[in-house]
Length: 335
Image (cartoon, rainbow, N blue to C red; front, side, top):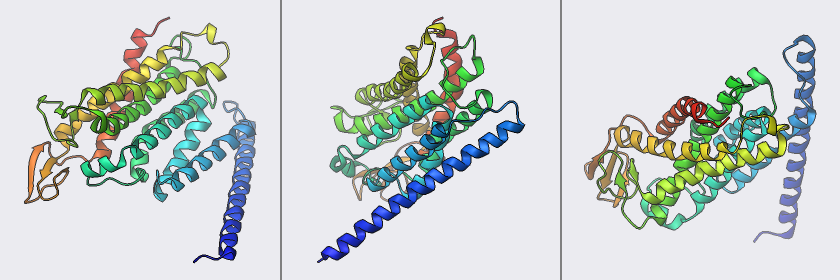
């Protein structure tokens, strides 16, 4: 049995560790702020960043990452990647942070929901999701790059979506939102569809029924969930705009941001399914009674070829949505 002294020692060590992390975070935030002041002195195009913004951009991702580690939503490598993604997006634009946060929280909860049933379907199911650094960067790499480009273009801060006044920056904002909404839509569809759908999924390329877990299989419930996932991300972005951006009445309407997120989630999920049906191998392994992504003597092929894995498909889907959808939004955005 564990003695009372051992419990006290563990609590003391945990308290001291938390204090060290907090002090290191404060020191790192202060050093970055001083560095930004020095750079802004010698460069007229760069503006000093508030120390509170530095602190928020470092402290909040650290707290959320530690919580995700404790809840097994991230592996240790995934936590390191999430810290980088979270810092860059939070520093660039709080609307980026809120949309990323909406994606992460909802996806983590949905991944844990219905765990017993998902274990019967997915041979690679992990408790809590346990996303590693590859999964983090396949979902967050494109938004991180766009956030860096955004900071180079207009600097850290929040701006309204207005193509007539800030075309390139508005394009980057919608591109980033589309990439996050694409990931959210695919995750919501994958986590909700197999649990709630009353019917078997159908292959998106042939519309024939396939076993649950087949890459490229879609259901009506999953498609609705993908739209709602993107809508949740867009709503988080929109609410942050309302709270933090000044003079919104002088810019183009911002409410289409929510619908844009929903459409990006739906199209991203469908694109992910289309690529998965062609470029991911799916076969039914009779020895375990599940759909798998490898070939073996006991596996009967359902669809696809072993060209890409799930992470690569997610990455390609988010890139395509990020490149194409903002141009369509520009032509349809109300002025």
